[in-house]
Image (tube, rainbow, N blue to C red; front, side, top):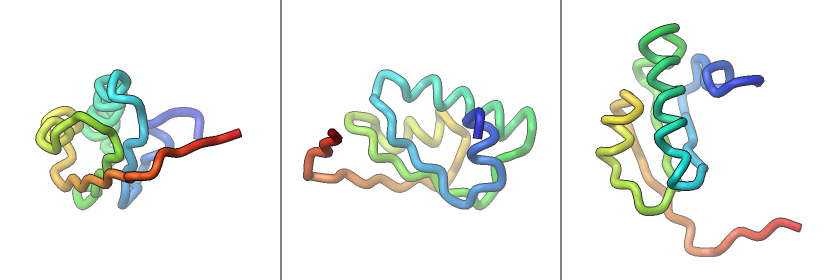
Length: 79
């Protein structure tokens, strides 16, 4: 996919795995996909692995009503 809008088109699950400072940018893209193009399913679930952001901020920011959170307790490392 070349954009967030394209990547989440008709997705049942949308995963937020970004740094907290980038959440607002992603919210804007998802709102655009939901309200301008209708590419977000009404039954979509948003899964957040973003630290430090309350669940209600995802509902309000993205417009997606179903939100779940997962907080891994093992640091990720890539080489």
